[in-house]
Structure formats: C-alpha cells, structure tokens
Image 1 (spheres, rainbow, N blue to C red):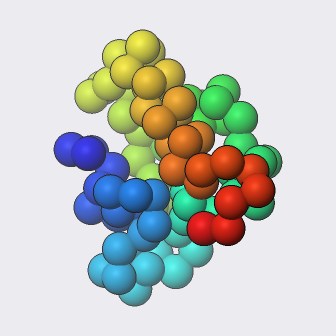
Image 2: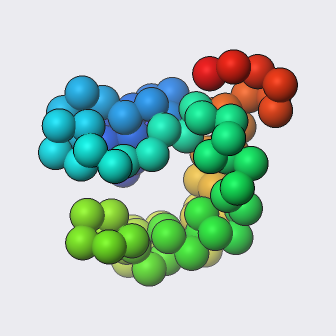
Length: 84
C-alpha cells in the first residue's frame, strides 16, 4: 500500500492520475493480464523496474517482501472465471 497504491490503486486498478500520466499502466484486476504474469515476472519488475516509469524497489523491499507483493498482486484479479 505504501509504495504501489499511488499509481496502481489499492485494488490494482490504476488511479485516474496514473492513467493520465502513464496511459499504458496495467490493471492488476485484469484476469487476462494476470494469467500471463507469473510471480517470478512480478518480482523481476520489482527488482529491476520496467522502462523509464516503473522504478526498481530493490533498495526499499527485501526479496521476501517482493515475493509477498507479487503474491498479493496475483490475487487482485480474483478467480480466473471472474470478470474484473
């Protein structure tokens, strides 16, 4: 919540401000997107960042915290049959 909510929203849906500034920001409530993201791929983005907009969190989060964040993010789309 401290590091991600500003852009990704508390429920994984990007905020209006974030969508204005970063039109391609993903919604973690999107079941199709989440089917294609593994826990390891989410951790890799947390470790290394992504492009110029998503910064690395390797100085802020421990490896265990990154795994916990990745597991949480994967829950935001709900069950595979659920429509976001």
